[in-house]
Image (tube, rainbow, N blue to C red; front, side):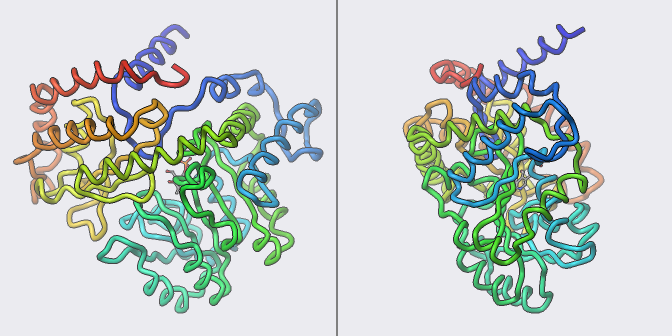
Length: 428
Ligand SMILES: Cc1ncc(COP(=O)(O)O)c(C=O)c1O
């Protein structure tokens, strides 16, 4: 039976090698990150924290967890790091539990402006168990700090999130801190998307401005799926008990035993991110995004591009995602600020360069890739999403049948298969 799984893994490895992976929250990890993740450390139970476990036999596990935290402390220049959260969303849940009582107010960037679900979106724990207030971007697509300040003064949030998931600009953490300090809120930077860029020195660090930082480890940081919660000096000064509050929120609040194989794999990624080679990588990720954005008629200050498709027609995000997939380019459909259609049939796509850069692609390759993207997008013209909601599912079914065998897209796919042979995938 297990053979079936390995056959499928081989099939997925082929997909990841032969196409252009451009989802900005994805990356390729190194062989060593994979090795640690697939190691015997998965066999061990270690509820608790180093030196304070509920199970015996954790001498080595303690060393691994301490080593991972120490590496992160040095890399991000923070005094406290916790590495046990299973992933970004549970880390944000634990952090919210540590800072807020149920029903208290949290403020975050709205989903449609590029915020994350866990920062106060509908249907997320963050709005089910807490009073969520959202701020937005303005017409220039940048955070509307005037609105943020107005809302903060009015609602007096306990916690303000400074973090994004579909936002192509750098964040002004000082501006956030000015507002949070004035209303007495705990300021948390969720740097999931830009952690690798911060370590690489190509994105400003929030360390001097915020109280707490959360991050996933699997995006620009090039680690396994996982997360870290860090407390800054400012955060410790504000609340000397914050570390133990976060620990209690992780276990017993939210989780049981940590995933030790994941912790070890995070440590390997942090070792790799400490190198000069990683700094060059991060700089290239941003350079590549800027070139790609310019070629597509957009802008980026990070690793990510949010491309509006309104010039191609009405509600074209889904159609673009599928046409690009047929051509061998993986992106995701995304709402754009002031989304005119709906989150399910949005008007843009989100794409990025972390994974392509991990394969060694540079400016020249970005120009070629932009050409393919523009060619592929020509094929979606005329396929506007029907204004009548009940016709949409049937329309998309027919659209996919037609586009699936579109010769222009299939010929791009062939070219990309040839092209990608020159750029080996780490770990495959
Ligand atoms: C800013 C931000 N925070 C949190 C998360 C959640 O991470 P996970 O998918 O690991 O739960 C994401 C994931 O996309 C993110 O972009």
